[in-house]
Image (tube, rainbow, N blue to C red):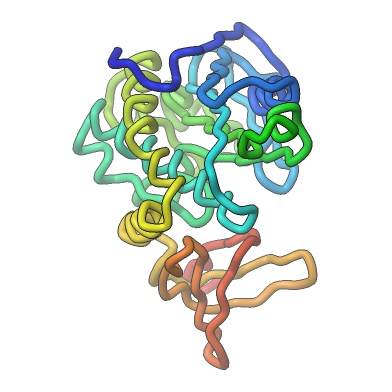
Length: 264
């Protein structure tokens, strides 16, 4: 594997949360580049407090410790960086499979019918040993990719039927998790440098727009103080979702975005 900043890869048979582990390491002053990989998470987390769990050894559950030189209003682009690197890695494993997958803003990878392949969660801690020493604040980004589970839809519990899919199902054969991980970290090395410059962040937002299946769809945006519906028309230069409501155009900085199917 070519040398990258992501050489300190720590593997766990079972852990509560790879994100939690790296946040604790960051508070103790760990440098950028530490990676935590688990066969199983007992308390995996998603956005808005949702859980993420999979059978042991089936999927890729990995978190990375980053320290990008960005402001608090731009840290969401760390999620974009990881999503794009994951799409790159899937393209290495199977180029035709990669063409079936897109980004559902802000943090999911989905296949053509909308079934979820992966979820991404970025968390930061502004109070850490590293911050006190003048290092950029840490951002921990975790991704869970359904690699080999479910093998078929029959493996899914009823509540996930039609909602989840694995890379194995898309490719048609079992996928080597380590090969996917190595391809992912190689791509992440080349992409994470874009977080540190204005031009690089603009490139990330532009590529997000080109790979985002949310654009052009009818969406409902759930915010802490209510919700609204409209049509997603694009991605702003800083990576936020632009939604036309018919009365105005709104830029969504953070929120839960639901693709609204016709007739619903």
